[in-house]
Image (cartoon, rainbow, N blue to C red; front, side, top):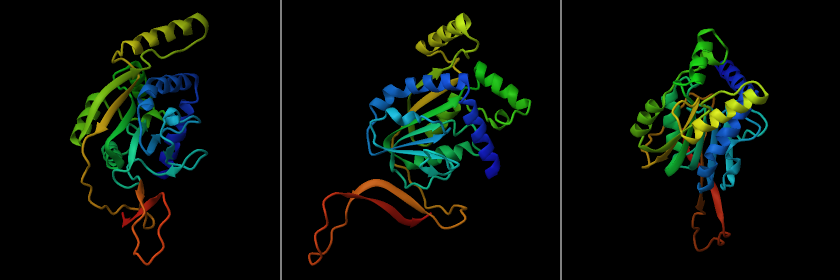
Length: 266
């Protein structure tokens, strides 16, 4: 299973290194920048596709965590999306970049993302749109046993919206990108890029990728879990808290805050 996940991640990263992938990555970064500009807090987490330039680079939040399944340059946290070693209600913003439609258990992964998100925290879900030219091409390639697209499990915007509502998250808006896949060079490419910009400006639901912007409305009640890990692990508490007060006989603590690791085991 670990080797299979590694292969899928590698294939997806390779696709984003192509001309079309780089074009889509630039369009995605541009589309979510206005949301990141107004996102504040202590911590921002990006999950999913590993790229040389993370999508959260334009965020004013200074503590940025890049999580991936495998160790690599720039990766801060090695974890699966459905088993995040982070404390409940501890991350202010989560960017989930294609980490649901290639997951074995997408509902479990989404529930785990909701668990670590703070109340009123922001969630940006970036997924391929199954009802688009790109989605049809992906499913066709999957039927032909392509190593990447055979692992693709289509998730529609409506289904994800229903799941988010069940988890106590409210969808604020959605954006549709990559309505016309670009190809070729010269005038042909210029024409296709113009057509794609038209679909994006009018937010036509034909985009090959959609971005769901949701907020977590209430703090979840999450029972302690025992995860199937090789060794006992602890949930990492990210929220800065004041140091515990000491007895009058002890020396006074220094000013400042410390990051606490939760002592409860998974």
